[in-house]
Length: 102
Image (tube, rainbow, N blue to C red; front, side):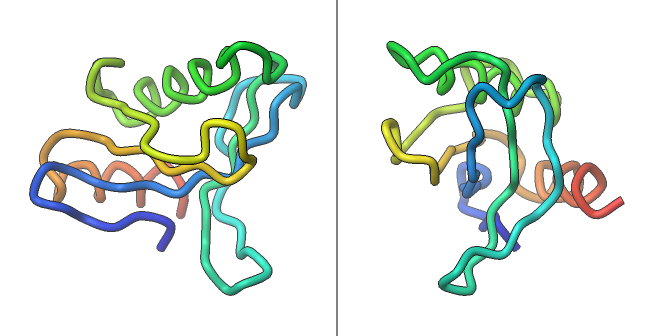
């Protein structure tokens, strides 16, 4: 899975595509090193953190969290990013599974 539970919530790995034409989550992708990531696209360009902000907003809407509970923890300038979603880990995991695994 591209996420792991922590006592505070869930840590999520995202492979971002800025200027992707639309905002959306496109399932789970396997990376070259065997890890998995959520494939996400946003329509904005990666300038001045706008794509990161759009990704955080997309994730907050998708899992039903306030934007203040979605935090970028690594990968600010990389395509592969790690986000922390703060909340009940079991509930967040269930929402992610329903969203991304059909």
